[in-house]
Length: 212
Image 1 (cartoon, one colour):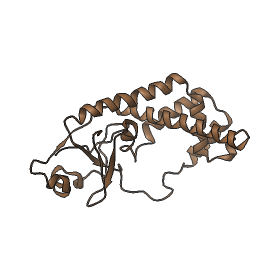
Image 2: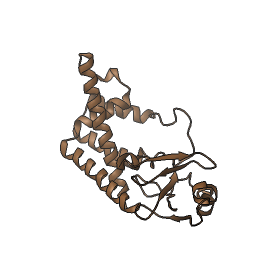
Image 3: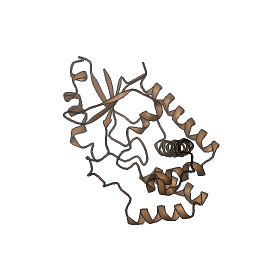
Image 4: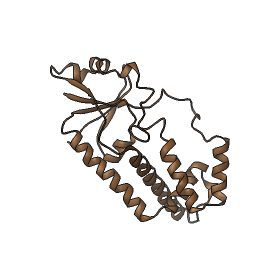
């Protein structure tokens, strides 16, 4: 088996994941993964997939925001009333506002980015059988640690009151740059549709594979 090892984040700025320290050294990973140990010709090569990480981060959040907005409209039809901010958590309603502010062209651009990534990863897996990387960029966090801070809650409140389209688009750009800081890796494979799973021990390794 020929495995690709990636210690850098797959979405957002191309920095190494702090969680990918000594436990993700190439020889350590190779020694502890049974599928590679069992193969007499097993090999691990540290590489970076041929994808546009920052474009994919924005594409991911665009599709999530539009999907949330569409789901909220659907719930409103089921409930027989117009959805309102008071019915949802502040972060959920923010995604609704962003999804409503985006247009069809932006949604199609996000879909195009995901499809191009799928084709790029198909070519990538013509060479590699496995893709190995940290599931999280950082060690697990405490419950509530990612909740909006005071300044962020204030910003969400302003956007609820004044949902200016340009401001919502700017907020989406900032989200694409910062919000996936701790969880930048698994979204790529949500976008490409590849099968994969997590190998829990001795390291938490995310292991997508090729189609078929």
